[in-house]
Length: 49
Length: 207
Picture 1 (tube, rainbow over the protein chains, first blue to last red):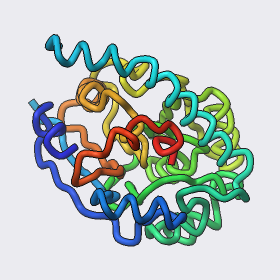
Picture 2: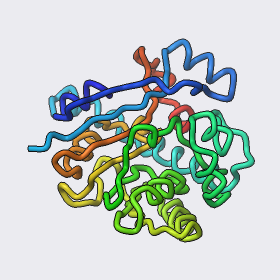
Picture 3: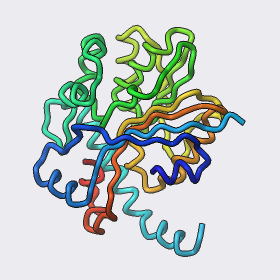
Picture 4: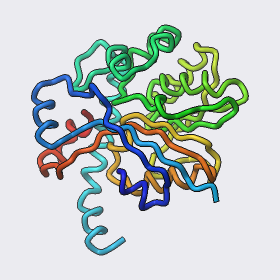
């Protein structure tokens, strides 16, 4: 996502992991952990000109 | 699009339709039966976990709070100002739209876009109950039904990951934002390429 935003032309792209995000079901949580699944807050700006 | 990409897209097309249906079904289920159990935390418990202000959650319609199915809090960095026009991409039951509407005030405007027309009606009803206006359009995030350079800020919460065509979604966000416009989006990402068995499982897409 970060790269997609930059490739598209967005500037000031920033990302922060969302603390506390997890899946409720243990089986999903385990699979998500194995694949490094995280929730992330992205911010970006379209250039002014 | 390259030949390989086109081949991949064609191969994925039937699956995309199935997954779209499953995603619609899942989020409608959360909205209509928020007391149910889902793969993800939802409702007030999730919103509090992500740092939504309690005052917001107390003030918003209970139905909008109970159906909240986001993965974070885009308001933490949205810096919304009175008078701004905001797009809530994948507006669901409307909680994020309502919070945005409170921040942009009566001179601002909040527009929701959701794949599901039932959710659009629900979000608009919740907004009306809250005393704010929200215009919701049924539409796809890969083809957002808004003019070029018409929005100051895009917020979105756990939605873009549901698209097979994320590059198209990001291009659309760039198109509809005004010059100098900004986005604050929370979403799910994975560090590793997911196994085909996961990618091809509609129930996991809707998780």
